[in-house]
Amino acid sequence: MNYKLSKDKIIVTNLEDFNIEHILECGQVFTYNKNDKNDYDVYSKDQYAHVIFKDNSYIIETSNPSYFVDYFDLDTDYSQIKNKLNNNANMIEAIKFGYGIRILKQDLIEVIIGFIISANNHIDRIKNTMKKIRELGENKGNYYAFPTLEKLNQISEQQFRDMGTGYRAKYLVNVCKQLTSVNLEETFLFDDNKLRNWLLTLCGVGPKVADCILLFGYHRCTSFPVDTWIEKVYFDIFKEKKSRIKMSQDLINYFGELSGYAQQYLFFYKRSEK
DNA sequence: TTCCAGGCTATGT
DNA sequence: ACATAGCATGGA
Image (cartoon, rainbow, N blue to C red; front, side, top):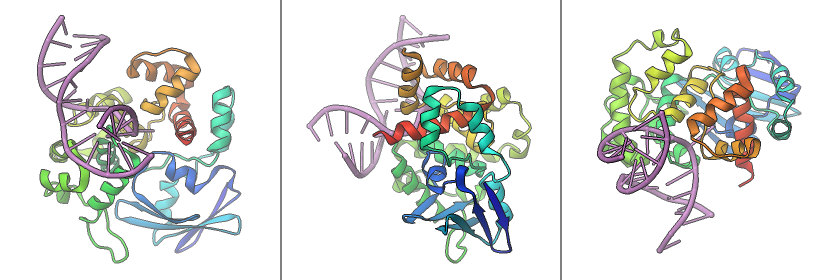
């Protein structure tokens, strides 16, 4: 994969490890919209990009190209990651299917909110709710910035409920309050264990959601979130059932430093079978 | 109608 | 430390 920066766009070519559909629809992000077959709106924090497929390359139109170079993790060599993971039969199939996956560098607040809503929920409903929350943020003309923490703290439990969050509404009100009482910059310096334990103190955050926040909000690729789909994958590989926490530990022992990447390829492939 | 979705909290043993 | 009920919502 190669990319070229200019003032108002990024052009991505040699697409052996960049596919916008794989990237956005592999379950890591809820803040995008598909317009037609190869045309996506992508929102992150107060930024927006329009992604178009044309002439065997992608054009990422944005007023802030360097933000989206980081967001799409364009300086990481995913061919190397895939080569290292290709020593397992299950992974070979999964990588062949989701060859263009990349792990996004998302905004922490959005990841925390999104994955609290994700508990026992459907991806399409989560996306819908996140869109409604975004519309409470600053109007940037042709899109909305995601609400700042200050604005999020003004949203009532009933408002969250009206946006379809169900019983999770009170978690969201509480967690917004919790997040203002800490210095979020400092949490990026925590080691994995300390960070995970802190995340588990957040309202509505259990083991699985904590692992998702570690992976998608902090890019800690030694975490392996286990949900209903990964449970099925685990059974395919190990032929037994156990608690999700133990499955996660087994999978981390198996995939090591590349756990998070492996998890995304496997999740995307398994969910495609439905 | 019942089941399910990127599970968590609360409440038991 | 582990097991289970209840939980909001809407699509299949």
